[in-house]
Image 1 (cartoon, rainbow, N blue to C red):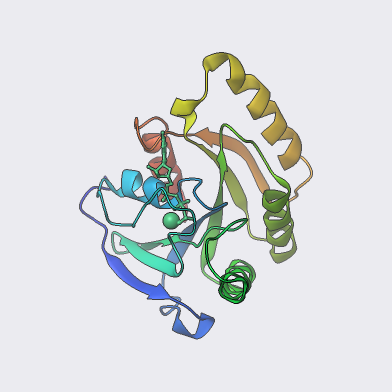
Image 2: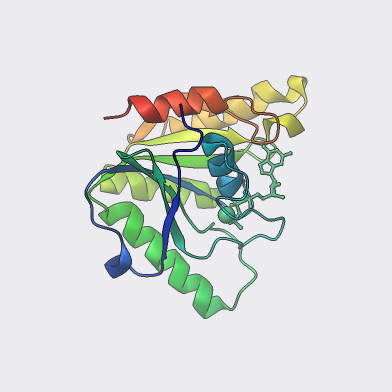
Length: 195
Ligand code: GTP
Ligand code: MG
């Protein structure tokens, strides 16, 4: 369904550089290194489409990818940490916030949460921003392959409790591993059924 239908469109560094709002889009937000770019590669079945790396702060622009003719997939810079000068980090964060609260065609934001760490205060802040902007967001747990079965329940409970405080949260949480492919078909069908 998804494979071979994605291309890189452009990297955006200011709101004025966003492509025309002519189709719906979903974006992938989350702390640095949580696995946003890897998830886009897994979803599109295209290794190396979005640049992933072990160095937090890898994605520094808002990167647009097509998904077929009707959707954009949007890879965002991470928040919470970046190995860059403060002024640069502040510039990305400002852009990230402007984008999340000001993009008309943003249909759903996926907020990625590392399954080993759960929801952190910075995630909570982003969720509150999405509440204010009335952008529906859905939590995607990443790196589920790194969590022992016996620890899964505790982290899920923590995430559910965090979501309960946010009116813009979509209740279903998706568990994924970009490495093993777990949850990828589920997330694909969530995206393709959005209108
Ligand atoms: P920034 O662009 O810096 O914000 O990071 P990002 O959120 O785009 O993370 P990225 O996709 O670059 O992945 C960060 C690291 O996590 C890389 O070393 C990936 O290989 C690893 N990683 C991502 N997803 C998974 C996963 O599902 N399982 C495992 N084990 N590792 C993963
Ligand atoms: Mg990235």
